[in-house]
Length: 342
Image (cartoon, rainbow, N blue to C red; front, side, top):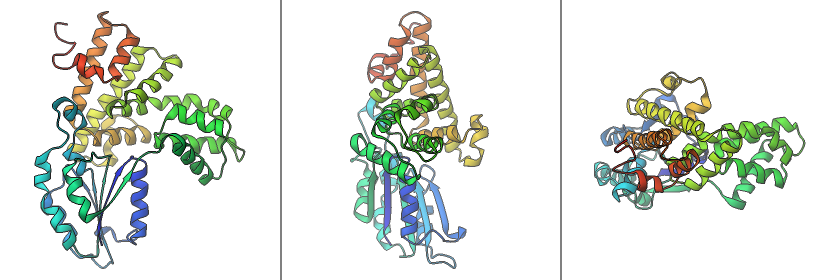
C-alpha cells in the first residue's frame, strides 16, 4: 500500500486524513497497530522500523507523521536569510524515499503537514513514491460554495447575503467558519440563515478574529490581518488593546511551542497555557506547530518594539498597528531594530 502526503489547510487536512484512513480500511485497526509521530521528534530508524513491522493480529498498521516536511522549511528565516529550505533535514531522511516502495503492503503511512513550498526537499523526495494531496482553503466563489455546502450538511439553508457577510468577517479560516455556521444553524432553527442573523452573531465572530489575525500575521498575509484588526478597532477596541491581544497570543504560542518541543501530551496543554478553552488550545497549538521558537521570539520582540514606540510617543498607535502587521515591519524594524537607543 502506498504512502500518502496530505498538506495544506489545518481544517481540511485532518478531515481528509480521516477519510483516507476509512478508504484504506484502516479505521478499525487495533491500538497496538496505530502510531502517531511528531515530525520534529521522529527519527528515521524509528519510523522505518515501525513501518516495516507486520501488524499484530490485524490487517493493517497505521503510521501517521505530523509536520515532518515542515521541519525542512521556515518562512520567517527564509524571509530574513533568503533560503526556503534546510538541506540538513533532507539529508537526514534521504533513505526514506528508497524505503517506502519496499514497505509491507499492510502498512498505511500518512504524512500530514501545513502548506509546503514547491522547493521543499522532502516533498520532492516523497512525491514519486507517495500519493500527494494539496488541500488549500477555498477563496472567492469557491469559498461561498463551501459555506453553502457546510450549512446544507448541517441540515440548514443560508442566503447569498449571509454568505457574503460571514466570509467578509471571517475570511477563509475554515475552523472558525465551521463553528460559527454551526451556531447559526442552531440559532435559526430550521429557517434560512439571513444577513441579519449573521449580524446578531457578529460579536462572537469578531472575538474569534484575534486568532485569525495572528494566523495571518504569522503566515505573511498582512492584508487579511489588517482587515480583521480594523474590524476589532471598529468594535471599540483601541490600538493598544489590540496590540495587547496579539501580545498575549504570541506569548501563548511560545509556551505551546516549548511544550511541543518537550513532547508534552496534548492533554496537558490547557495547564501549560493557563486556559480552560479547547478553542484557544487548538488554535494556539496549530499555530505553534508551524513555527520554530526562534521565529516566534523574533515576532514577539517586534511587537514589544511597537509597544515601546507607542509609549515613547515616536509613533501613533493606529500607524504602529498597521506597520506591525505589514511586511515593512521587518524592513523598518529589523536588525538593528526600533529598540536601538530607546
